[in-house]
Image 1 (cartoon, rainbow, N blue to C red):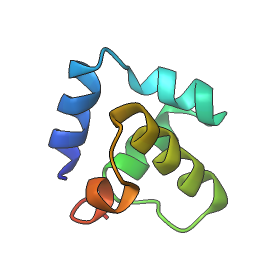
Image 2: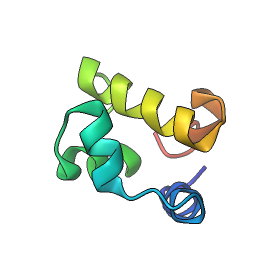
Image 3: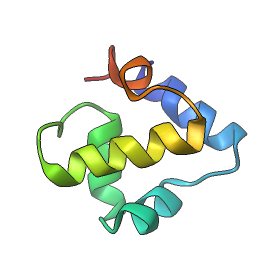
Length: 68
């Protein structure tokens, strides 16, 4: 999914980036960077991706294959 598609899907679910940030215990800025594909390898990035996949009820690889 592209960053735009990820954000649109989150919006459709009624989930804001701040909700993801709170659940993953990171900043909203980091969530944005991860969605945009700028941060990928850290442990925190993996947690954010896991939370987003959980919220969207999709496989992490499906969501981040083209955004990463």
